[in-house]
Image 1: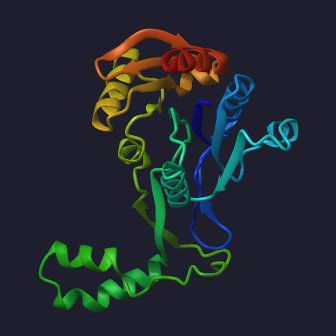
Image 2: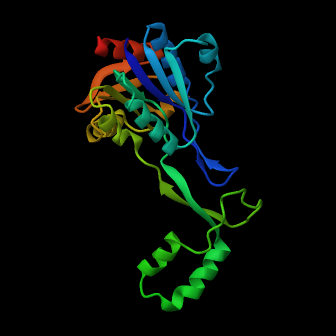
Amino acid sequence: MKKIIITGGPTNEPIDEVMKITNMSTGRLSVALGECFLRAGYAVRLVLNNSVNADRLEDANEGNRNLKITWIETTEDMLRALEALSREESRADAVIHASAVGDYLADFSFLLEDMAQELFAKLPGMKSAADILAVLEDPSCKLDDSSKISSYQKNLTVKLGLTPKIIARLREWYQGSLLIGCKLLENVPKEELFDVAAHLCERNDMDFILANDLADLRAGKPERYLVARNGFTGSTLGSPEDIFRFVDGELS
């Protein structure tokens, strides 16, 4: 039995116990892909954000051992889930990394007035811009984000950091698998979209990237352009069924 892993939905990064950084991804494509591969007899492993609605898929496949869903919240959760799945006894024939993984997480929060006071107190001992940057990167005025930050803070500021790049780890974990990633840009020339996707493919040792333009999606055009390391392959995949047929053909 062939096995496929599909990621889907956004990742959520907490600012405190209530607020979070997220994006507008719904995960619908990933759930639809899961349905396609299940119907074809694949063992399907979905790694989905908690916000994704997979009720219909779960209800229709209750008791089906070919379906396993791992629910995640943060980028780190997804990273750990994919690493764990790579250690399963039966290897994955393919991985479709369709999740809209967030680029940023909240390092810490502070109030501008507190930062201003801290900088003012330390300025006499500073000799360069690097000294100021050191304070900004690790101030003593950080707010406690282990619980809800007080409401209506006029000058609440969040310092962002970078999330780990999951796509950069996939080949390490899934060495013999067909790896397909996704890239979304907005309102760019197609050649630029293809170049960016090809670079992403080569840099991360992926087999293919499904590239699309947010402007096209908003216009009701769900086309995803299939890009390899040397550029656009000439194939456009418009529906989950199109993507399934392509992947199934590659694995045949």
